[in-house]
Length: 86
Image 1 (tube, rainbow, N blue to C red):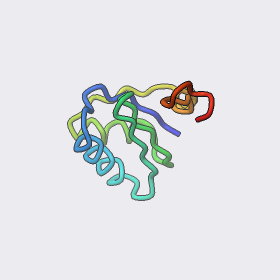
Image 2 (tube, one colour):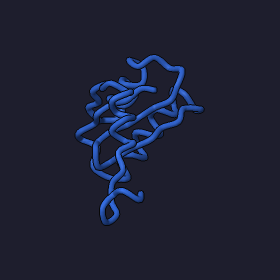
Image 3 (spheres, rainbow, N blue to C red):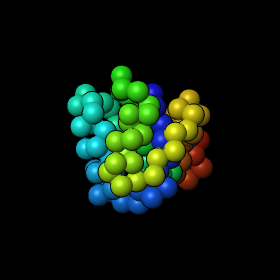
Image 4 (cartoon, rainbow, N blue to C red):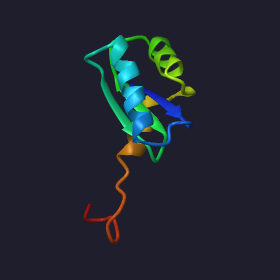
C-alpha cells in the first residue's frame, strides 16, 4: 500500500481528479482518499514514483508517507459520544 499526503487536495473534485489520474496508470488500483487528513492511499502494483508523478501531473503536490503509519492512523475510531462503542 502506498500513501501520499496531498495538502493541496481540498474537496471531492480534487479527490476525483487524483483517483482518475492514478487509474490512468493502473486501472485496477484501489484508491482511498481521506480529505480531512489530506491522505491518498493506493493499493497498486505500480511503482511509488510513477503514482506520485501521476498525482503531480494532475496538478497536486503529493509527498509519500509511511503507509503502515497512515493505515494505523486511519484505524483510529472517531465520533460517537465516548468512542468506546464505535
